[in-house]
Image: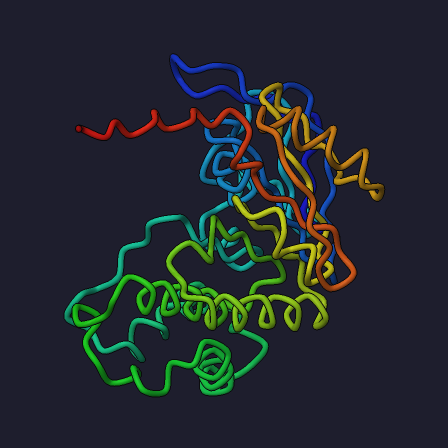
Length: 267
């Protein structure tokens, strides 16, 4: 369980992002948080990971107050993947993925052998062809899969993922969402930040919108309510498109478009 209990937070010299935030993200579910730039999606994940400490309240993972816990204890509770991750460029991919075992170097050891976790991560993110290549030779999308695999090796009960699909091609986005679905089914709590309001719902994930007042708004069931909430939060007109039993939403590209001036034909 990932919980925010009365959380208040503001960055130094920045706006107040959260005031008395209460939220729960349970085990066995993938929860996606979407919203405009600057509303605090990344900050929310960093609070949950214990990398930021709330001014008021606390963020807990499996009951542990993350903002006040030892880094190794935090890493055993939650695997965090930021938007930009550093990898040792001269290491082979397999060794970089194995870094996910670092929190378990001190006792108690991980419940499952490292070899088992490495095999699962390699398969989940299709890393077999890359396993012996140096990290420096990878594309941005390939490096992102390595970082996700490293988080999987960490074997924590919670995953905190900041825009995990941002560098992935369409096929790898599908693989990622299948992997998240499977991890939640195994009992993990998965919380991710995203700019895509459609893909999470096509997989049946729980969607929340974070508005500019720091409120987490559950995505409503009816199409009229969805339109009202989306257009309020994003301040742009949208059009619905049914797909796979879900109403997907896309920007209305015709709204506000300025017509091109007529071409003048010279005599």
